[in-house]
Length: 273
Ligand code: ADP
Ligand code: MG
Image 1 (tube, rainbow, N blue to C red):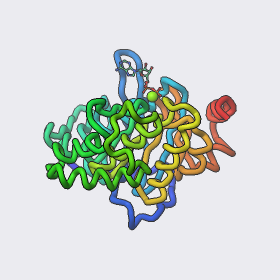
Image 2: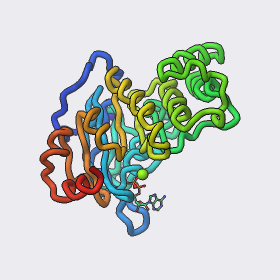
Image 3: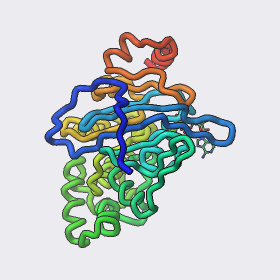
Image 4: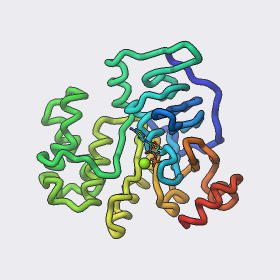
């Protein structure tokens, strides 16, 4: 079922590929509608191993739907998505539908971590328990081992001293850092961020962006939906601008921010910058 087309859209310089754990994302000809509303319209994009792609666009342009499709939380109507050449979910090719078994979908979904705007931590579990939960239930680690790994991850996001705090005892920025550690605990090949700082008070934004920058430096493969233009410019290898379900423009940050090809990109940037 594995299939990868030669459909790269942008040439991207790979950053420390030796440190990356894989995670090449291939999105090919993906479309999706809700009723008569076309939310994704023939989206094709390649995210190379160890690179950072940021997705910009107005509210309603399809950014979250695209991320959720990569994680196979959405079923696409046409096209396909692959991680390291392995199909994720379905591939609708004209009249032919290739479909993975549910068990296989669940296995592959673990390879794609996701961090949401609203943290989504379990309120009744401490930070360390939030992080250790899935490794125990999904990866089959012993609780002892999972909590040891969770403590390492908490240290990595600068929260070693908050291991036993409950979410309500943490600031939004701290909760989001726990959520990032929780996503990392399943050792995903790719990490997706959907507006990870949009729900935060302005003074808490940077502590979360700093953690994401550190992940980028370490060679992780990241796809980030964000409205933080300065951050996007600094961290991205590739910037994607979406409008009405379509990718209007893809390029290096320098290109997209300084010399956009599309007048709609320029108009969007003029509003947010
Ligand atoms: P963005 O993340 O860029 O704001 P979304 O992907 O969330 O955009 O949404 C794209 C469009 O799809 C919007 O018009 C939204 O209202 C619509 N949409 C999203 N999810 C659903 C759903 N489950 N049912 C119907 N419409 C939806
Ligand atoms: Mg969204």
